[in-house]
Length: 207
Ligand code: GRF
Image (cartoon, rainbow, N blue to C red; front, top):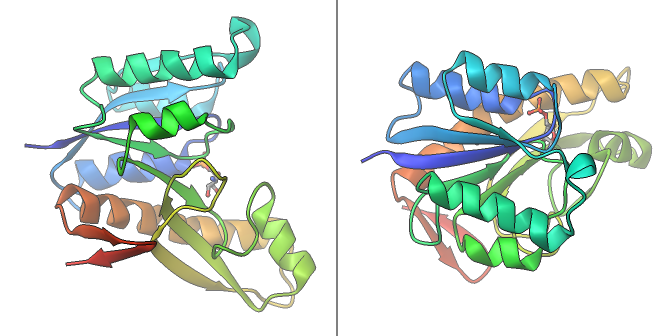
């Protein structure tokens, strides 16, 4: 049976697109995106979801006027209604622009992952590529990790290094990292979907 996935987005949606294309092309098997939730109206990510025939929900945080707890409850209820719960399914944060409450995180134990455009634990938070350039590292990259209440701090599932070149600016480095994100995220989902990941303390082991 396919793993039911809910993807949370807020903008461009290129990682969502990479997941949907991987499923369509059979590179990512045993997984199915059953819901895409966007925190923003009128974004490309929602168009992509519709183009692939995936159910969408737009919960515009600004206009709903909910507390974080109420907003996250709405997310949990929608995901649950699409078969994604504490005991089944997977939630993927792919460019979601909100920090999730501890209640949300504990509603999906071991079933909530994020992609971050740096080699964690370096350069957590926003503008990770800019942080990497400003720090002067020679190598950056991307990380897929389980989500814990502390931002960008959960157990690491997979990482891919990307060279930082002397001529790089934020845009060129981000573009090269993004290309790798599009490969890494579907690969990490495949590992999860095929039941090959095991958590030992902070370490994620691949069988
Ligand atoms: C990606 O760089 C991802 O690593 C970060 O947000 C960006 C989302 O891009 N968390 P997209 O919406 O998937 O194109």
